[in-house]
Length: 151
Picture 1 (tube, helix red, strand yellow):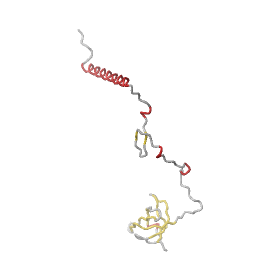
Picture 2 (cartoon, rainbow, N blue to C red):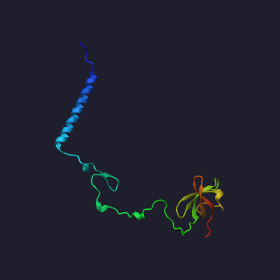
Picture 3 (cartoon, rainbow, N blue to C red):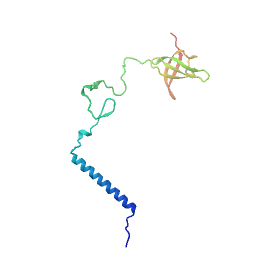
């Protein structure tokens, strides 16, 4: 008499697959019998003003009306009649005489600008008020033609 070609492990795998298939079929029948239909409205999700997903639709009274004409695309438009002021005023926040560099804080934009000793017109030290022009250096904005501010 010949032995079965199915090993114990193969029989176990086959039994597990059959059991899983039967459970799935039972669940499908239960869902069908309950009569609950899933509709598109049940699947919709909304995003509230804080970016959180919610099931309730947004309140129309909280809707913001935005004037389309007020949105600017691209660079901000400047008044062509006004000539930009290239000479700026600032305060020396740090300057190291031995190394020959420092930083100036622009009074208008509060931007910190690098300054090198080669770009100085006269000697400066910390907390001096100076006038300068902004130029492009190898690592960003650099102060050029730096001189003490005289009222």
